Length: 297
Image (cartoon, rainbow, N blue to C red; front, side, top):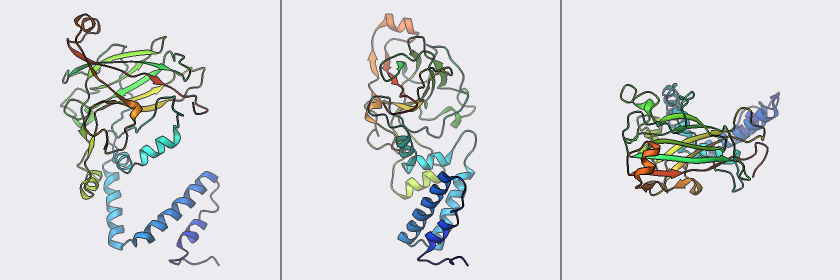
């Protein structure tokens, strides 16, 4: 007869129930999760009312998830878990571009745009030119690299938060780097903004006295081309605006010093004319270095 459940042996007894899990990785995860979870419950001496509140909280979190919003990702973000997973899985060794959180508002299948196009479909905000070059760890170009970019508008909202108010796919686009690995596109200067506060995650922040703000940034997912002969790894990252409020207290812990850049003011009518922006405008350069898929560089 198997050992019966007791307070003292609870973790051992439940963990043993997973001992026959065929997948060794899943077996290790379930064993560790069980032991840490039981240790937590014992440490705080969780009450029945608190456990019921936790179940209700997680239920409400799931009920807010749909194709345009992922409340569980937002919860993971504010607990620092998203950043920890990113950091553990994308150690760069100091040469490759550092990764950061995906965030809850990424949308698969953003429209493909030509280099130089504007992702600002409503033109609201301070005009900005973003340039960069995708390379490997030794400086070699990555021609045909794919860049998926998205950002919030001048009012701090993403397009999916304002359906019918802003054009669909506003401030989103997919670009392909040229044969030298270079890319450029037009947009508007990003602004700091609060993460959504109308759900369980917002309630958690208010209950714990935390602010909901993220510093100004542009999201990037940079991937090697589909026929990549070098075996580069993709990177999910941000371009943060230097001087933005909340750089030191990002609600989702996503800021890394290497990702902060100046959005310089450019007063050059000839350059403005060439890139199709009014003069003056802001400009920022954001080179991206991909690491080898098989190791840290």
